[in-house]
Amino acid sequence: MNPNLAKITCIEDLRVLAQKRVPRMFYDYADSGAWTESTYRANETDLQRIKLRQRVAVNMEGRSLRTTMAGADAVMPVAIAPTGLTGMQHADGEILAAQAAEEFGVPFTLSTMSICSIEDVARATKKPFWFQLYVMRDRDFVASLIDRAKAANCSALVLTLDLQIMGQRHKDIRNGLSTPPKLTLANMLNLATKPRWCMGMLGTSRRTFGNIVGHAKGVGDMSSLGAWTAQQFDPCLSWKDVEWIKQRWGGKLILKGVLDEEDARMAAETGADALIVSNHGGRQLDGAMSSIAALPAIADAVGSRIEVWMDGGIRSGQDVLKAVCLGARGTMIGRAFLYGLGAYGKAGVTRALEILYKEMDVTMALCGRKSLTPGDRSLLLPGTYPQ
Image 1: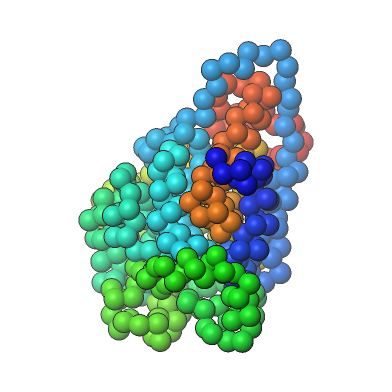
Image 2: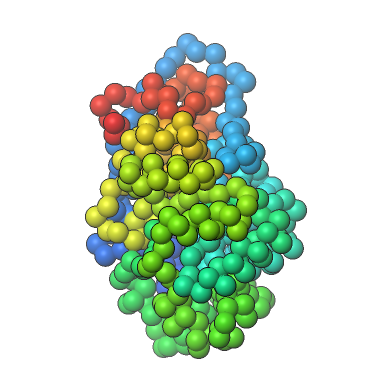
């Protein structure tokens, strides 16, 4: 292991390094929430309030974190979440993260709004990955994305339901977020302090939205892309569209962005394979409840009919364990792996996964378990977790 990586002991270490090495507008894009960021903060703080039960004199040999998520094997109940502009945290970021996830043994999800295309990632990996779909007004383009994911042998489609209208993130407005970054004086001064990032970007041709430019009607260059994306997210998305997508796809379907018990019941009725309790990392409805607070009721309501997962606020293996205890079959991580990617590229993603695995394994042992059962709240201290 790189001696520097050996000294990285937690996800916070990777965050600090990523902040130093990634241009401000792209670091802020990943590390921010909507409006006051209250929901973004609550995702983390509500997890921290949950306390664990330490047990002693228990045989801790033979532990295993292995599980399956929508039929996919995973060495721990963690998958890489779809994150937009990943390839702007580090050159060829989606490819590097997908390779790290594949080698470590956890699922990887590619975002519609990725820099590296579906085809790029398929060529660079050996095992099937998942593809995340945003629903656009242009249904022909949506159909073509689904068909491209099929052609790339993607093993599951992750349909995001909570981005019909874009939430406002103040930092993106202040930074003038664009990809590639506009060469303003402020941006050039900031880029001058990020030589490693700049050298990486000079060495790749992937600097725009690879799934969209050259594929969507009328989008052949960056000058028209911003207007297209602002107009294309479809506010009319409904459960009927979910059914159409399910039929068009024909494979494993995961519904992302469920935060309400009533919506969870409707999601279960679609016949999807899993739903993800998520508030989009606090990037959409500021003032919504945290993902961990919403999880128990949803798991209790529909967990026998559909796999329930969670994302939002996970910064440690203990956070993963807490989510599993409250009913999650699996979890997804976004910022945790992005920090690793921004800090050290592929090796940083691997280090983030190693950290989460070790934290989860040690915590499980000290709570007196060799394995975990979703919904087993006996590992948690009563009165400290949401009911």
